[in-house]
Image (tube, rainbow, N blue to C red; front, side, top):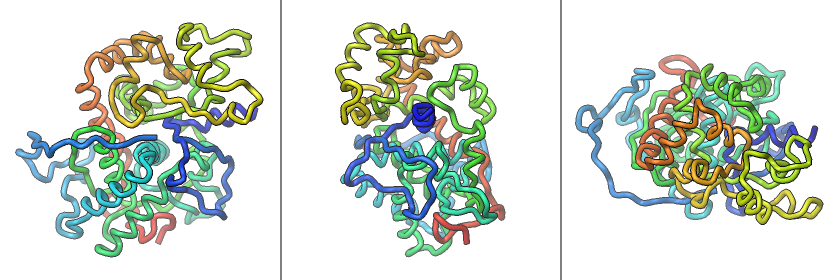
Length: 373
């Protein structure tokens, strides 16, 4: 049962190795249901690029939600995007893992009730229930809240109660993707902050588990408005992730209690992963982190190339991507075209960050991201 709970914690499969510089998440008094650590990335500098969208409309609206647009704070807080970028750049120098932390934090916020920064709340206004971040699906796994707090503090100093926490998270995640190698992209603003946060909602089949079947994965993503191609692209975030050995070691030795390795893993991959993971019973058994691909600081297509060329996967759900005929062609396409993956990942992340947002007079703009006003 313990292993099932540990496995269920690794949602969206961005596993981050804690470091001394890693930003913490938890409030010492927050009643986490389950603690569990995790790890990752860096930065690729690219020259500024001019996009066709910039030529046609400087304040492009989002087709998914017309209330979200570029330059949302150009009048009320013109330095907002620069403040976010500056804080993130300084953080990355000390802790490149922050890139992955933010991508994962954005996913866990948006896939529960929408991109309303409810995952950042330490308590819910309606009381009675534990908040999302204390869910066993999150707990100490979910890093990045301290970084959002730092950015929000800087924003409040210049523009009091103007930039929402939901936009702060979305802007930071957008910048994080640039730090991980994607072309710069102007963020969309206009989100408002939710008032409530419930752990039970996070645990009610709103986040995927790494041992799910492909049918379960497709059903969840379809429920959230994402098709199979978009799901595969989002799972390409594993390009910048790690998993701890104890999460997948049963695939190497005792798959589904068969006493044999997972038949979907080739022998060379099994031997490689066994070399990464120590023998059971030693202090190192759980601790070694193994990267999903050989470039864990870059958002590239090597994760997909490994699936196609070597059938290498750490998680069961990843092996489904290449084995299931509904997703195999998509994986092959992403593996064959690095630029296509970069383009599609950025586009699908825009869609993710637009999911069920609060805009206009809905919700609020929090002064502090951990607490409603």
